[in-house]
Length: 235
Image (cartoon, rainbow, N blue to C red; front, top):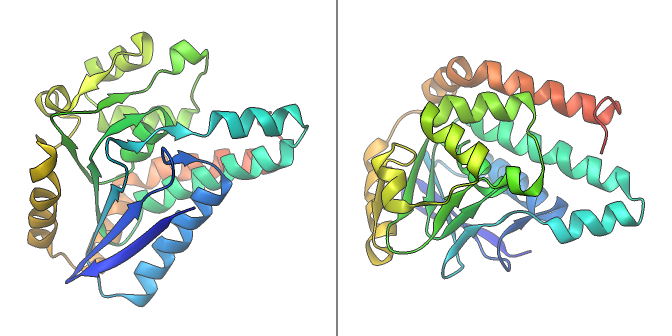
């Protein structure tokens, strides 16, 4: 798993760069460890997460990995992954830094849901789709995921994404307030970094406000995670 971070003044930048950035246990653990390190070892006030891939930000859950583990009867491994994924979402929702997802490519399924845990999203306009194709995979979502998405996405877009599996371009995402803005790839990171540097907010008040804003969703995620561990949610 290749995930690293660097500090640019008061902006911490995480780069995900592993195949198509599919979510499995190792990736989620690495992200959680990195968030801890940035909080404890730096004075960063803003977090930016980008992809090192040329046209993919995150392809969501590593379906092949999940199916292989389920076929082998490794339900405990799958349960651990789903638990950690919920903990990662919850961590971002209450993280003491302002967070920005720099969507420099395709953002599918669990990757799109992950991006909705960030305070702000910017997207590439010239290539890449934002899509949550659960209806085509015959999958439903947890109540905590529903509350997250309906809190972030305009209602008409949420219905469209969930019921049709529609793919939105970066330009469409910007026009429909799914992202703050969309830029051509050669401009995207510079625009994101300029925005990140301009925020410059203190951690303490950011954390308190985010706990007030996102606390109910975070509690639902913790409840779902506990139910996974207790076996109340089957995998």
